[in-house]
Image (cartoon, rainbow, N blue to C red; front, top):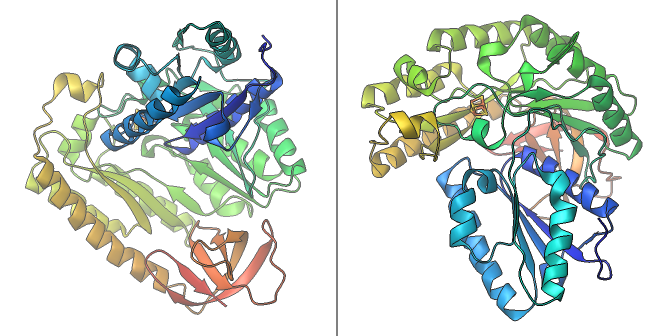
Length: 444
Ligand code: SF4
């Protein structure tokens, strides 16, 4: 449905994971097709869409703070405010009742309805009243096939290959906000990869909540990764996030042997204690995880391994935490995202277990893990000093425009002085690494 007013300007703000980034690109494509325009300037927007994340308390608080800011804006002039994504899906009642500011709520499977919802809200606003619209049905089939994302510029293109998750880890809200697992048609994914290459993207990151459970007839994830990596013009393929419970030898082999599949695996551990892993519903033990790491490192010697860890899950004792601490020391991840557990509404843990670890204990455990991981990351990064590394050039370094920034195949950040040499984002260059910190390698 085409909006009546002269091209309404939409401003979209994205919080949370790469999947949300990718969804925002789909939303932009669908709305542009229906005659909406986009602006980077929130002050000029007729519509502000906030694409939200529900994974942690922190993310929630950030979004509520953001919505408060929009209240001020909406007092000054007509504005339609839409909340999209996981928080819209998970907190529908709360947001619809407690936030009079919000005109539109749309969950991750309902974005095709956005043009209609926005047109209706804008028309109502023109006539001097407010018309709320909610689209929150989860779908067993929606994969947004046929919609080519309107991508953010850069060297990386996100491609979502599957949506939803059937794992129901007890702490996780995703199966409730994004529904059951669905894999996309491989031919549609390959078409998107070719389109990304034709638009100048050099790297593709395949996305899915549980990406290695991808399956479509004869296609499994290992086959898909290799087929995408064969796309002419694409130099690198990454993926995130796999679940340790289904990481088949064929996928390890594909990473080891295909020159364009990056040797970086993000393998969420979550906890190192078997008792906590069981309560979390992760379906692997500490021994299973270690065996997988051994298989991966045995086949891909230079692999970069990163992880996610939750501290202070329900009933986590000091001994359980020590198990996690020992795991971190034993595996020696290249880096780790370490978070405090925060209870999410509607999850199995919220219904069955007590969130009984005091906040300061969670905080202390996070600090201890961050400290040990920082030391390990620094030690691992120092192993690159003296080596020549291939880098995909991304952009100017954050701290200085006289420096360039790019990533190694293992996704480690490298910065170097640009000097007078040619600097072109999207090119592969080789740098000699002369120094390393816990966050960065320094090239010359
Ligand atoms: S695998 Fe577990 S943690 Fe990951 S999205 Fe699914 S339920 Fe959540």
